[in-house]
Amino acid sequence: MTITIGALRPGVSPQQVLPAATDAAAELTTAEASNVAVVRGEARLTVRFAADDDELAAQIAQHVVETTATLAEPAAWQITRRSQNRWLTLKRA
Image (tube, rainbow, N blue to C red; front, side, top):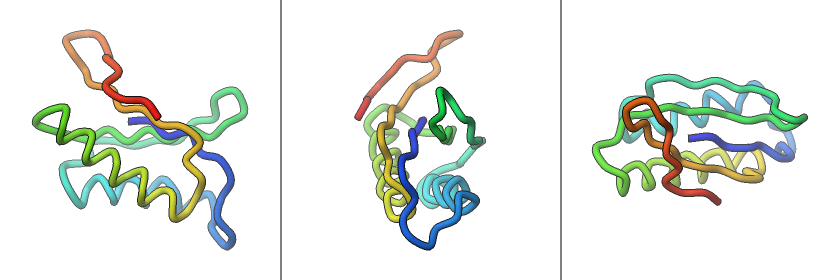
């Protein structure tokens, strides 16, 4: 999943956000990888995790977004699933 980050909540440092998002996924499943990038001037978190189906992936992603929202404004987010050599978008908000 990817989350575009808006403003940080008061007292939150940028270094807190990615570990919190990754830990939120790891509470429910295996968090495989995570990173942060700046795309067109916006911080974008990527958290890759395992899920048995699309419904479970959506529930995990919702938990990650809710956790992230306690630290920073999630301006936009999306869930993608790998299918062979392509990434398919499952949900966008």
